[in-house]
Image (cartoon, rainbow, N blue to C red):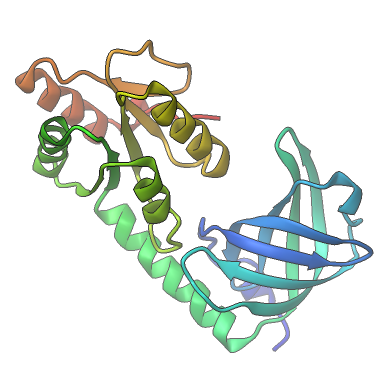
Length: 233
């Protein structure tokens, strides 16, 4: 169906995924967000970036969903960034299954906005349970995992719109650091919270678990005043 003005102005949702752009060059891209009338992509290969007005044939799949969607649109915006080139694609035809998908994603995003969803990564069970309990006491929904691989598997679900990812230092310091770097690059919109004794990195927030009452106060301040939450860029 043709894209109407109302569809172009419909709500956007930050759902991630993979896309293959078929133009003068075939380029792989990451989906940044989408709306019923279009979607935004981040392309790594600058040589494959099309011009504004170029027609686009896309194969797109959201993270966590097994099926691919075939979309037809046109490029309405091209922005050069440090991490790649951002494209905004306006769909010329909106398949019903894509429209249903966007509506479902919007509903999931609203639900996650109503109740903050936290991904907590900590291999030390006692500390993980302590931090998880403090967040749950503030009304948060906490997903607990013990390893970076499990964390990536959880965050790689399109319906998981995280309020923050809480990553604790591990015995192998490189594992926690690699996970922080990966999430900062792949999901820049998800704030990172560090747990441990490492120096606080610019753009992040840190928690100390040395004193239980103080931990509760720290989390109360973060959840009650989200402007204090650092966002990595």
